[in-house]
Length: 191
Image (cartoon, rainbow, N blue to C red):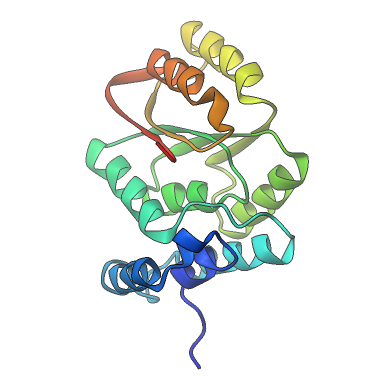
């Protein structure tokens, strides 16, 4: 039997609606045509999913088609700086950075174990020089990032992916708008 695809690995052990073969088959088909195993970042993405699983991280990360979609959004918009709330194991940050070599990613993660695993995965993927994982609660970190932007120490973001504690989605969105360039893309998971 062939090795599982990144889509298959990222949908194992999820809720019933996320393992429905109709959806996983569509994801597998989509990725087989849009992101073949010969792509330079395929091995890093597959490794990341395996390390996340081996480390016992919850299997709630970004599905492969979404990672590809986010990376393409950044490419189309010419994004130089991206913000992510909810790093988990670093999978979506690796998608963004490996598909957009001129882009930096700032990712905020609340859980120390998740941040540690993410940093390991990001380093193994060869993008640690462009992906910064900040440990802390989003609502504590975002005001500091905003202050850095306002003082000119940090550039505004062209893309934001919000996939953290859902109770703060509206707050995260408001902060993202304040810290984004005009016509930036802000994606919020699960709404």
